[in-house]
Amino acid sequence: MARSADRNRAMPNGVSAGARQPGAIAPPIFRNVLLDSLSAPDLAALRPRLEPVTLARRQILELPASAIPAIVFPESGIVSVMARAPHNHRIEVGLVGFDGMTGFGAVLGDEFAINESIVQVPGRGWRLAAAALLGLMRERPGLSALLLRYVHAFMAQTTQTALANGRSKLEERLARWLLMSHDRFDSNELGITHDFLAQMLGVRRAGVTIALQVLESKRLIRARRSRITILDRAGLRHEANGSYGVAELVYDRLIRPDWRQATE
Image: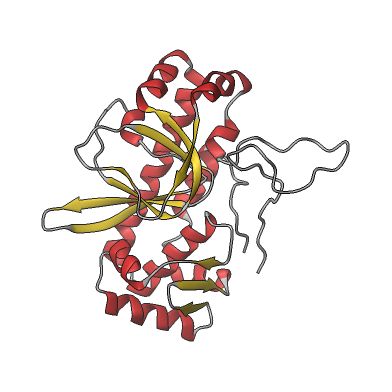
């Protein structure tokens, strides 16, 4: 299975992970797809307001009904967007990695978050005050258009998640989740516990254990304590039974089709 990681992509400190050959074209400063897709004038206006940030595991970036303090553009790591209800009922409704950003409500003109955003896989990124972003969006229509397209693409992801949650078998939902995480990760190994997976999928831990065993019996993954290794991505996509791919095509059409870390 191929992994199309671009090792010459720069990390948040601006230093490339790979050596540059003489005469080679300089790699982009930003790995985050949205930042890397901005026009030069829009990026020049945004860049001085960006601050590097470390994303720690289980770090909460947004809480429901609370003001959105800042927008985060991940360079690495994965952020889970969680819907919450009384009695601590929670389920993941979307994933954000280096493909996107947090703070969707701010982009749409609401200063309060609807869902919880929590770091699932630690990493790094760029932080921007929500008020600063809103001011720039009013001044720069190109920036505003790109971010609104991303929010639309994320809405496609959440609607497909709702469909999968209501109509797909647990092992199909798990296969979809693994594919989506794999898209946003630098490795075939995902560090995740059964308990956290159960919380993401809104099911009991025992159900996750059985679903992992189903995928492992088909040699699609290898599951060890707090770690899952992707062995057969194409097989996982088949196992997802159509629940993966629709939202991804929307993102590719609206933003950029060449962003994924993983290849079939």
